[in-house]
Amino acid sequence: MGALDGRVVLVTGGGNGIGRDCALIAAQEGAMVVVNDLGGGLKGEDEGSAGPAEAVAAEIRAAGGKAVSNSDSVTDLDAVYGMVELAKKEFGGLHAVINPAGILRDVMFHKMSEAEWDAVINVHMRGSFNVARATIELFREQQDGAYMFFTSTSGLFGNIGQANYGAAKMGIAGLSRIIAMEGARNNVRSNCLAPVAWTRMTQSVPIKDEAAAARRAVMAEKIRADQPARFSVAMVAPAAAHVSGQIFGSSGENIILYSQPRPVETVTKPEGEGWTVQSILDEAVPKMAPKFFDLNRGPLPGNTPAQKQPA
Image 1 (tube, helix red, strand yellow):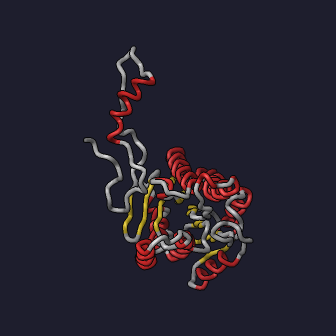
Image 2: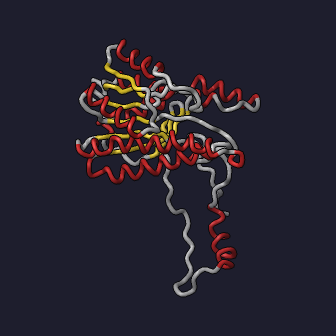
Image 3: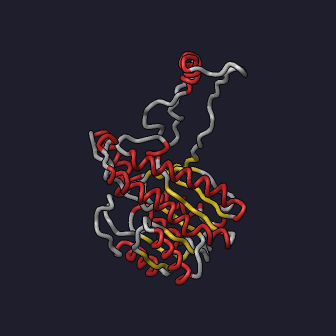
């Protein structure tokens, strides 16, 4: 028996990369799969094509599984409602959404156009809203539903040249958390994953030196798309019904649980005094400063957080 026997799963961005492996692995675990992919380019600049989604669906069917394809955009709410209806028509329902669909428009923020901002926000943030909004009422009514959204270390840690992408990915983490909180009483759960994998997104990052080239060669061999895909499938399985509201990472064979923002220091004035601008500068900031985070990229899996330690 598979972990998803009898379940119906919608996978967005399922024609390539992590999404493709999510669809294939979900089917291997017994799921009936709606494979969605617009079929456009990495930057969302190309005409859509039904080819990638249908190729994956056909591969699932050829292996004895059940799958149907869809090539609409997650940026269109009505189209996402159509994906839900497709799942109902073909397979009788829907139980989970895995949502790795995404594009990149990398550029330094001071050079970023409104179009470059909007395109990324629309696919990642608006797309995540759409797949959740089109399914949340169904999941609540049937007291059964699971989401796996995709965040990124570009949001959690920051990454130069990806203000649009990082902002969207941090927004997705917040969306996932609140859906989990609101959905708990109706057995609707939501988690998000910050994957590191060798995909066409990873390949698009420029190689600046020999060290970067060497790191990329290692990634191609050891950090594969099937690894975060396998984790994503596991988290929407009924056996993971107790897991919700978490931020995970996956890098190679490392599975990471990330912390979530919580207070690390509080400074208080005695009642009746209150803070002034000068006392904030003279007292509050120096007291908090030892716990400030540096402006570096952040830790790799297995390392400690990049945080200054108290003197």
